[in-house]
Length: 176
Length: 422
Image (cartoon, rainbow over the protein chains, first blue to last red):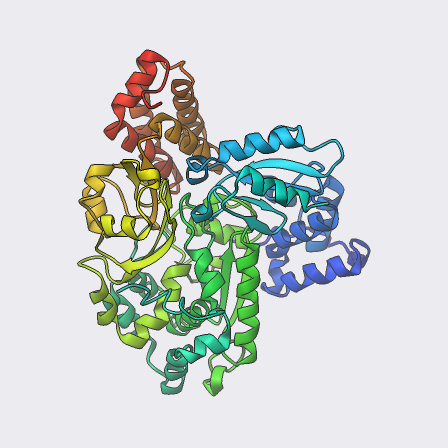
């Protein structure tokens, strides 16, 4: 049949892995690596990118992706592919708080447009932009699986549901 | 007769805790199976007898899927749970992870025992951080209690279970894309065959089931396949979680027997908001063709009834639309979603989804051309069935459904350059 499935290992694994990331970042990546078969270090790439992105203030750089590649014995291109494929990785700087607002059907018919408009006005930015003071990024996302609480958005790891303009104000007021 | 299976613990306080789960007999089925060294074939037969069909959307019989694995093949096998809940309108697996994680764990261990797998992965969508943490905490509890790890309860059977977090890609809900994703790659679906039962995660035999399917297993084995089957109707065994949202008063997840009239589900969900008229229902997630409201009120919630109306039950994600909605705008938003989420691997889907969106968008913006509806009809037939995975079909079906039932609204838009709904 000719099906094969092998990890995309580099020919010359990078040796000085401990120099690539601070100890706490390494520890977290290693926790993920341990879940997968030893020859499949690359299975931890999504987790590694997430951890590194978090440690870097919410976005990835080419250098960081290269370090992830070196750490996991992957060709850099394989890491770029992953980082550009999934929507949760950011390749440009983002604000301290990334507001991911759902505008898919259930949210749309429950007033997500009004929520977006309210935030755009309040923050003085459009979807996809970051405020000048670097506090907020406004990002349009697809269904986040919380349609029972539409309209909703996610900030950081937290979901906020049944949004109204007033509720949005009080949430944003509570963020530094 | 509600909350019999995945939501049977919903009346408890902090139902996600191990002690709560055990107070209702949790992990007793697993314990008995391990103590009796029950033959795996018996377990698979029981699951087959239950009539359980894949709750992620495809509706493939779960027991049959398990039986495709050759249990005695040497080497590692895997159990993978698909918690990449992403079909717009679906929000049930999130509640299983948050409120009943142990039942999922127990189901996965039993699945591992049944197919001879010693490792499992639960692929949780990356945005589900709270559910992920809940699931992780449950894994710790289960490990400490001896339900995960080596030599479970002295049976000689090992099973380890890990979470894997996604990164935001709808297509990873497709089972082979999900496997690629666990392998640290872009989530692009694989050609099938070979199917995961033969060539799955890391090229090893793998079963992959939806969260709700796996979480149903302990109850099926406790009460019997026949009991489960009899909860539902012909061809649709059991009860099912329905995620209902849209223009209704009390959206949420309801566990009801298969075959329950839609009108009852709508009533449970508080009825229409502001007393408006029911215009249409998207019965099984945004990929399922829309059904007009009057027709929907006559239907029951099961595979055959919804399929008979030209749609599909899918993941049980019911989006209720009232008469204030413009169907062109709804379809425009849905088409944007598929264009955004196409993985780019197959030309008909990569190009076709963008094309569908652009044509629907121009109709919505008053730039529609008289030939556009025929163009849309034609395009859908050139996408559906011509791609590696079902995302192409998923993009085409809502267009076909809308044009079948609400063609006049699209024609009005094209002719008058505005909406017939105020």
